[in-house]
Length: 323
Length: 124
Image 1 (tube, one colour):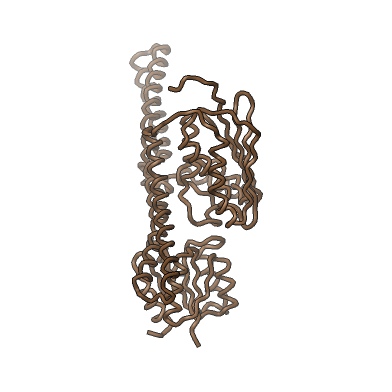
Image 2 (cartoon, chains in turn yellow, green):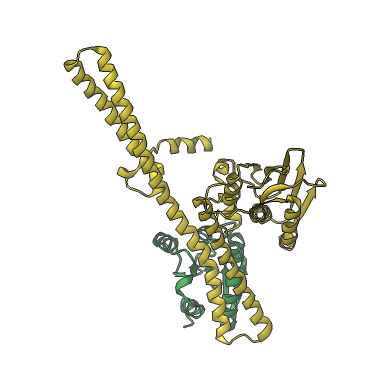
């Protein structure tokens, strides 16, 4: 019932998305589409009445109408499309500023406050306490650095300036390295992190850096979005043609209604924000774009409160020439 | 007896630095790292003042504020918002819900936050 009500109220707000774009009505793509539709109908009626009196031959009349309609439709499509893109970009810019300013501001505040304590000269048990505050400084500069790296990576992927160094690699070995790095973080979060490899994984032709990035982002998400005690299992299997990667967690899951947005830049699901206020909404976007860059795909299953499983496959390297 | 301040903030680093400065000033500080815990502690600990962040896990600061102000037992406790949200509507919304003061983290130093706390408690 609740669901139906929501759907109804959304469908009665045809220009609702314009409000989210934060642009005036006359620039709203949906509104323009409607206006163009009306103009097309008027133009057809006008052409019809003009030609029917001047030309007379019904076949010529319909041909003229057809040609004019086609031209108007193409024009309509181009105009609306370009406005839509402008609107999308404007919305992205607002989201970008919102996320970035918050994600940068939090660590910046931590640094500011810690520096103030350090410089106040009020720490009594000096060396130990000072060290603790130094650690805060280090962690928070790292946090800011990570966000900036992610932003640069996203922008490089978008402009296609992504440095590539394709080599035959062992996915299992790379994932093992990342899992090892994540063990202390997983333990600190009360998460049991396991890796199961079906022996002798064949090589894959890929860039080590982006394989690491993909594995890192997926493992980080899996561990981070578990409430309390939980489990993350990673499987690497293969057949003759493909290497199969699967990571399942017992985390908060992705609400069904939001599943189609999770690869969008800056998008974070509501329950993810509720569980963890920190996050840029870039991790999964980067994973998907990196895989797409090489024509590979990623998919997932998720149930809210139960957990999520991500999968991707990579083709086995058979000694092809390296481009 | 030292006055009690409930500090609801999910950033452990901010908890540490501001918590230290407040207890150094002579206040007793009770910490909560999420909204739900904050609300529970506000009811059980009966603090003299609540310092509340707005972006919080489990229950956001606006909701905590609303619930504290609607409960006769807690509605008299002065609440100071200390957050990174700097939008005009956030400020207006929090003040309309009954917050006493709204401070943005980027504009105040620890010492200045403590001054505001003292003022709200009538210790200045």
